[in-house]
Amino acid sequence: MIRIIALIILVIPGALAALGIKLMRDMTFGILQAPFPNLLLQFLVGLLLFIGGLGFVAGFIFRRDRKRNKVQERFKK
Image (cartoon, rainbow, N blue to C red):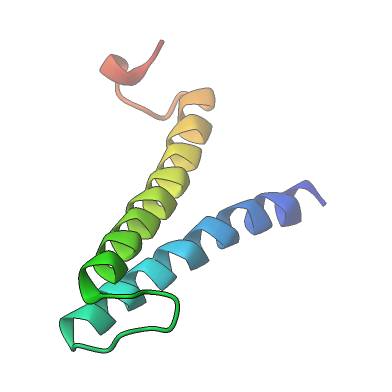
């Protein structure tokens, strides 16, 4: 049960990061999505979603590895 909850916790930010990549890609091809008034705002929101989702997943994995002592010495507390 705990593994399923952990998977759900990782899937949601991963999906947000994928949405961010899609928004940035659409801006590159000049496709404006509905809630955004211009392409620059669409790109910035996509970039924030991508960085936020990727940062959450990376932090989750880093914290797990730190608890299991699988990181280099400089990253240990």
